[in-house]
View 1 (tube, rainbow, N blue to C red):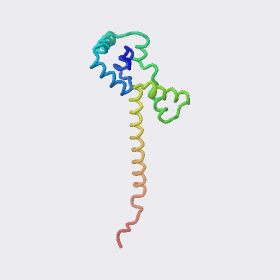
View 2: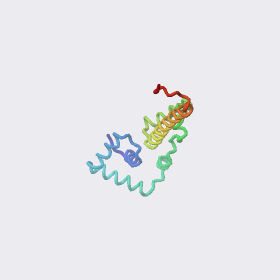
View 3: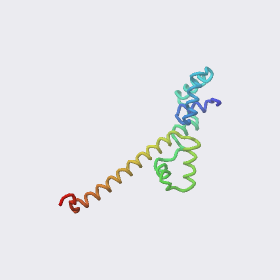
View 4: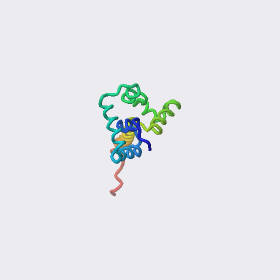
Length: 137
């Protein structure tokens, strides 16, 4: 794997897939040239790079909205938008959107469990006192 400034910027912004991030971290620790390049990139980031690309990355301009991610989760969007979000999550590997999607999945699962509990309680409440005691004579 070739480590470039762009790779290191992606590493700093947590937008690399897990395996690549682990490889970059190992190379920064073990390779003096990569460590030097990393220090240079960190300095640029600390000074506040103002290129269009940097602003684009910081503002998550290419990221779908949380509402769009929710629609993606439900498969309730246009096919083109579903394809783009699929590309953004799986090919680009955007950690920011991946975390948002994981959060939405957890909330969806919790809501589904909550709904089932409420339905069961409603059934129990609606039949309370209507059933005969069949345990006795």
